Image (cartoon, rainbow, N blue to C red; front, side, top):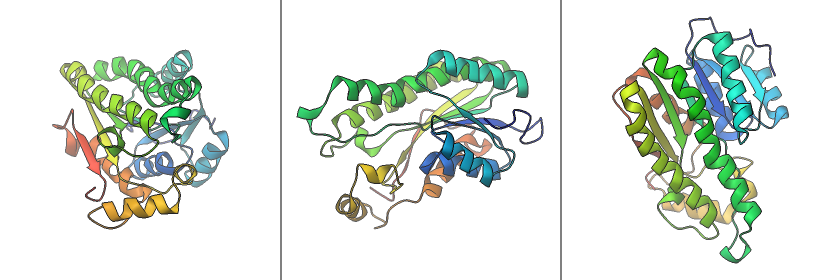
Amino acid sequence: MSAPTAGKAEGARVVVVTGAGRGIGAAIARRMFDDGWHVVAVDRDSDGLDALAEQLPGIETHTVDVTDRDAVGALFSGIEERRGRVDGVVNNAMWVRYVPLAEVTEELIDGMLAIGLKAAFWTTQAAAPLMAARGEGAIVNLSSPAATRGFPGSSVYSAVKGAVSSLTWQLARELGPQGIRVNAVVPGAVPTPGARQVVDDEGYEVRRQMAALKRLAEPDDIAAAVAYLLSSDASFVTGHLLAADGGL
């Protein structure tokens, strides 16, 4: 963990980004840091967080298992104590495996649900009272095109991301009266190191051809969409799934 007192000035907006150790999460953390937010980067990969902290002096990092409700609660309590506010949460953490239906195991389902869905409940539960106390806040979830269309071997992943989309709509309605906006970004194919463990070059070529722009996404493309939904420019946007998919 980086020094708790490090970071932006005390009045800076505070955003918590899960799965920030690499890939899209790291890009989101960098973008929000560059936009002047105090970034709390969270991951279970301490090496990735250490590398991020070297790139962004002053970022706050925490090695946390976001599937652990108590650990998440303690994280947010610490942020409240040190910073006095939480303005944004980005639920990016996910563990992805593509397998045929016949090879789906209980361990696989439990693992993907815990990281991809339950963790979003725990962070939102912890953040919502802090946001409500200030009368405003923004939560951005990461969904997927797989939530609404079929891909071979993606039954568990698609089910989790479908649940994330539904959770986004529901929480936007539930938390809106407290001034809390809840949206999601639906990324196109982003060939990060983690994603390349489950999608090969042939699979990415298929995805490239499916996109209207005929290219794959960069992590910064997704980070830009997240930054918009967190910003005051989106102050009247809630319950929205923003597709940053190149026209998929």
